[in-house]
Length: 139
Image (cartoon, rainbow, N blue to C red; front, top):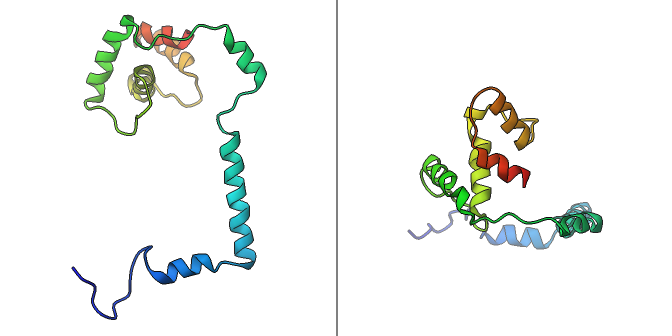
């Protein structure tokens, strides 16, 4: 539907908002510049590990995400999820299995505990968490 003549434009496409963003100067411009630099620095340092940790991890075996021992657990996980979750591009089935374990209230609250501590507590309380989860966590 075409806009009425003289009606104000709404949204981010209005020419005034674009002009205001371009004309920023003074203290506001300095704040925006400092924020942009902080974001760039945080983005550069994110996801890097110190060389000594990388050296420690070199000799360790990696988990086989397609190991058939996880097939039954994967089937139960998919049944629990109901539908394939959105925003999981790049995640493999082990991550999704652990995600469902994290969100399952059967094993108690997860705040302040590692996954392994939570698994151990659930086992001690008789909630019978899957042994495959423990295997994944100890790998």
